[in-house]
Length: 448
Image (cartoon, rainbow, N blue to C red; front, side):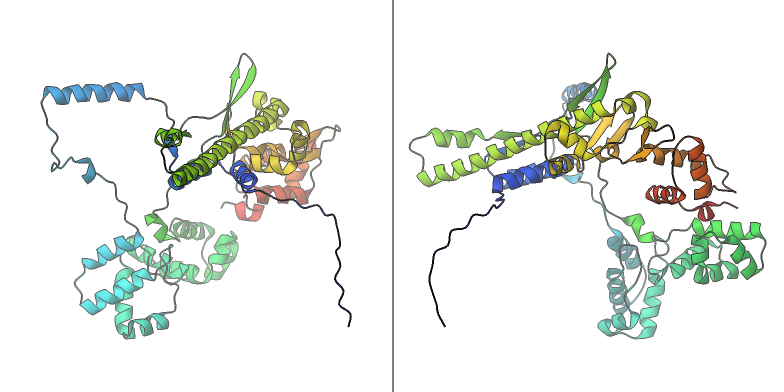
């Protein structure tokens, strides 16, 4: 075997993403709320960054506060740290499903052993309120007997919200019906065996199977539909996420003005204390190096945020220019638009447009819209014009909204209506758009 050593020179192209570029791309991809969270996170890691929340002053509330303050001074009421009105005693607390159930079960008279089993079962429920873990496994883990376990589970099934502790959806609905005093044998049979028929709106099959009139069948199914299949969600502690527009579009003198929404955003400042340390010649060298590093990091963050604002605003302005008919006449007049079109006009890469559009919202005279709403494929009309898939979906939605609910339109019938209005839309395309809109098929939309 021959082992030879040699030097070889080769050329190759590689894309190296620096930390700064990576941060810039990440920030551009963020929504407004995500950006605010990122700024707060950076402020925790970087002592040089100070974050202030921008907000408009509510002068009405401000004046009321001043008047209340005057009234307080006039009555010479002093602050008492032990007072019942101490702000520290006014912290809002939200309990969750498990804490609520344990509190309710603590009011029952039972042995310590049963209390232990009940608490364990409650902790084993999922977020919907169901007990989906195998009972035999739980009995084994608890080192208890079947009778004690069953008695404890039955106690839990009587707690609020009614239906918790059920092992499946049928049991959950039956518990609720019994609690409401509306349970009967036919209802129980339908819930146990035929929920799939209800989901498919196959009322006639149910009437034949149980030999009941159609009107009676409709009444029974309406009872079932009014029950809650996920009772645990009633105690959900999930916080609502409020969408904040990134840009606002307003009409002035028949022209549309687009600007960045600065309200309720986070304003970044550099802490003056650390600036003074840098200026002081007697300051520790290592401390200065640390501050310089953090200062560069803060400056880079500000630069990337400003770059994001500029890119998002440019994309928004181009959308407004392109979709002028939409902003003047409404949603039915939205034009076909691709990200590639915007990228070419702004001389950006298409991936930059995709990041600049992701999770961004625009407040318009017609309401709040996601940037992505304005991008849709083109569909040819009979007069050789072009319509957007978004406007077609809007028309389909309106057609279904106005249909006879007892004789809903099929996809083929909707396709014919669209062709009469000048849109060459195949039945399969109608079905695709209908599903994307979350609208059921005609057989499942039918009302009896």
